[in-house]
Length: 272
Image (tube, rainbow, N blue to C red):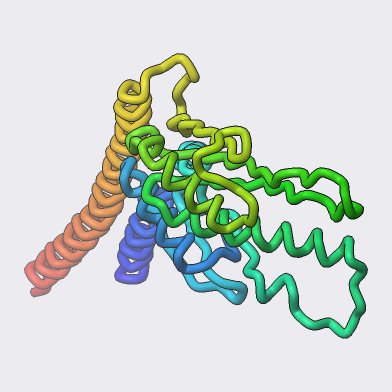
């Protein structure tokens, strides 16, 4: 009798545990092999729109995990925020001594790439800048007597729509001009700067910036709240089902013991 009751109790607890785990939802890997800075920025960006995420240490860096039901919304958030940021090579990494003799063309190409990488890394430090690209054109070596061709640069800036980054245009021009010989910050023909606002996840290009921010955030918050409410309901149902099963086992045990007591009492009375 007690064995049967124990089985009912065990089944009840197993039901609670299994349904509780199901209510917690499956966690999936959103990004892996990233730096701690990128992981922190991703966690913060997701928290701003009500999506819960977890940062974990892996063999090759850090990973960020989210609930399976939040995967799609999380990807859109990262796309709109430009995360994780593209890694920028440093000048010292590009010009490492590898024992090989480079041609003048290779040295020039590596120099232009390194210079653009350094400028992009610096521009990304400006508050509100999500993505920065710098394309540099330096004059080719010319023969004596030929006219000197001026240098030029093109700068692409993708920024958060809630930041007025265009007020820094002259500062960006000055930074690029001071980094590349032969450029002037006052000449728009030498330095072209293009500003593009990032679209919030779930918005259309025709939407206003304010509508994009409020609409997308509200939709993700409502989705997250609905998911949380569903998990709570499932957990409560699991707990009630398990407790009912345990209670039923207790009632059955009590009834069997009471029946055994009455049988014993009846047998004693029947004895002469």
